Length: 246
Image 1 (cartoon, one colour):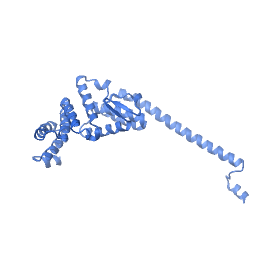
Image 2 (image 1 turned 60 degrees about the vertical axis):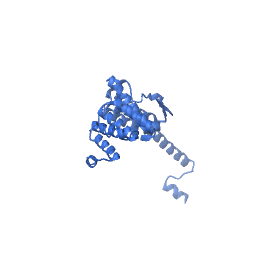
Image 3 (image 1 turned 135 degrees about the vertical axis):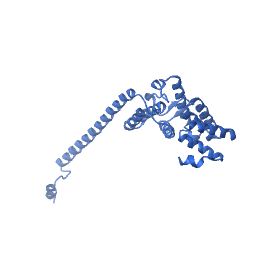
Image 4 (image 1 turned 135 degrees about the horizontal axis):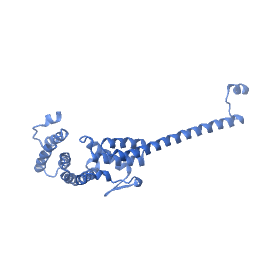
């Protein structure tokens, strides 16, 4: 990786911080933790060091320390990551719960969403968000996470399942269907997703049938209307009619 090669041996504080990120991309997260701990000692209180320590610890498998440092990062800069780090906290809490109970994500989700309660405002812990705000938070966190995490990953799969529920309730079933398929790819139990996919397929097909029915009805009404106009002398349909008028 060119970035790692360019920054290896750097002495500047910011360059060494960038080097820690390069190490994480290379899968050398434990080395990144050691370097970031040293940087935190040298210049305590820097937001980006806390945030990167949280990520490095998570990639190393130490979710407790990851949670501590992500919370510290939020304390140092609540608006970082477009104000979505609360969701990173929820993800880590879910992963810690899974370490205690291997079946955690079979019975719970990252956001514990109830599809029937997805409305104008959605309450997640202490956060009250619109569906749009929650969708944007999920998209932001997934965009960052998927740079490092490959399937299968139960936490990502769970978050995708929640994301699909929001899409189905507020946007289109087609987009929700695509997200559910991605959730399966990341390890969400297919036996829980397949019934939803079949339900969405039926609703999508019914929606298209209704749409075609409406078009057919409109077409029939237009034909009937034109016929009525012609019968009452208000509309000319043929060249012969035009010649008669001349």
